[in-house]
Amino acid sequence: MATTIFKPNTKAKSAEVNANFYEVAGDRLVGLDLTANDGSLKSEFNIGDLTAITNGSLVNDILLREGGVIKIYNASGTLLKTVSLDEATTTQRGQVYLNKQITVSNNATDSDHDMDFTDGVFQFDDGSGQAVATAMTKRLDANWVAGNNQGGLDTGSVAVDTTYHLFAIYNPSTSTADFLFSASLSPTLPSGYTKKKRIASLLTDGAGNIRNGTFTFNKDGSYRFELSSQVTELSGNFVDDPTFLISSPPLCYAILSLQMDASSGGKVNFISNVVGNNNFFSLRNNWNSGGWSGGYNNAQIGILVDSNSNIKVDNVPITGQGTPSGEIVTQGWIDNNL
Image (cartoon, rainbow, N blue to C red):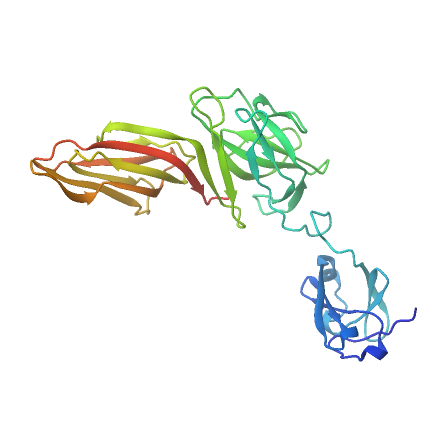
């Protein structure tokens, strides 16, 4: 079937063309429905390799659709480039990958030791490029071996009450992606793997098992984690502690439930130790010999923990009200550092 060559922005009557018309818009190929005779947007295709054309301005070039390809000509009719019209619907290889986010979850079969990673695309943390990873399960309780259902720990053995960071890693020599656990933000990478990106972090408990919960990821890569079993950090008297340890990865916003006993008086401040951060909250009961007369005695807060996962607890004595008591419970955390 013969087709007609049109320049961009040229309006055509349906009798003149029996094909759709495409024009370049940045790194997208935009399709207009000329058969409807209204120039309405019909489809878009990701064709980042069109930016490689340097012969003149793309907006003035002529585009011709022939079957499943677009042929791009200059004003003199010289063929500049042929581009496939295969529309991208999932992760694909090419000059530019679609932004398909990798997420994680506790493995359903062995949630105490294994993590599931979805397939997707990750940007290298050194800014040098990106790679595609396939879905797989990795074991925290075994040292790293390439592939699905294999060990994932970079070095040593699993420690109790420890933060482990989850990385997507890439070997440029073999074009292979995999996943890795490390207690360090500078992991020991397997031989040949030189690129990485942190995806999330987890905690182990007193038995060295993964603390289970729900990861909810945002489009920017940040996530919220809600513990299945909340951690009681303190139950009893609040005392001054400039390095009170919270069950959260470093430099995350710990989600805390704070409760002051109704029969307890005084005031307690909860303060972030991170320099330049003014994040703090106070609990106070107005309690005296006449009984409780109001105050802020419970709250759920998000507070930024420092690089050692600590906050400052500051007990402020109030004359005649005794030592305050209550609970500090960690419900989860928010990680914005990805």
